[in-house]
Image (cartoon, rainbow, N blue to C red):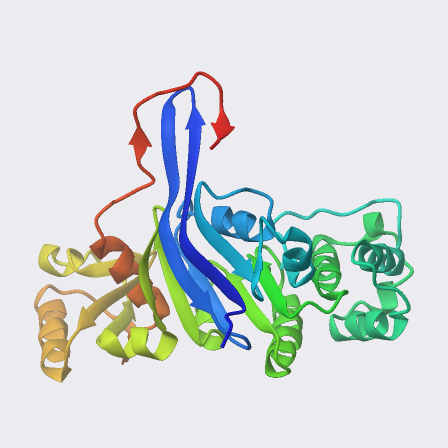
Length: 319
């Protein structure tokens, strides 16, 4: 089966006055038609760079990228028409209404007479009552919904969502994911980047993790979780943890999480807390989630890039 998206040994190098930066190194993976695929990584890992290469906004230094079999460089028009991309930034034209913006976006791809589909998008994304409103009058969350509609207005088989729910309210998240999940069930391929790992765990069937420009994990979501199965002890406390437990705990404010292998270790941790006089509230015992797996993988991988190389030019340019 032809992949919906294929990254083949993709590399991206930037040159500047301070030297050369390797932003992507031999990134290779395929996304199959109909997949809901997650691309995860910390800030600076190369996620947006990879999507920029996919969208044709930046050219890879090495390797090849295809969308539905179309090379993003040599067959750019066909590749771009197969993509619907929702960017991180709120980019909009302040001179048009929501409906006018969608009609104009359709025209960029040679699509006309699609008012019925535009109406469906407006209804599905909760924009029906804003169809005649000027883009400048919309809140940030409403503008984000319009960006999603613009990405979908030409009915692309592949949808790319780059941090689509960053800074938006719970209602928009639920509306967006309900609509995108429906499109995915209808056969659309979805590539998602997000820092909300609970979203990726709930939605994505397969996940790739990037760290410093390299793929450090590529598995089905269920396999990632099962392969690192462990019991997480979560509780709240205002007391300081003993040094030996603090070294293995993840502490966020009053909430502490400690990974254990079995019930015997759980009891040993609780006994240590009692012996140290640590007062525990809201104790929970559960399995590790994707956030735990993500942190384990990121912390367990040695830094391998982006790699600054010797200085070779005095102007900033992409190779």
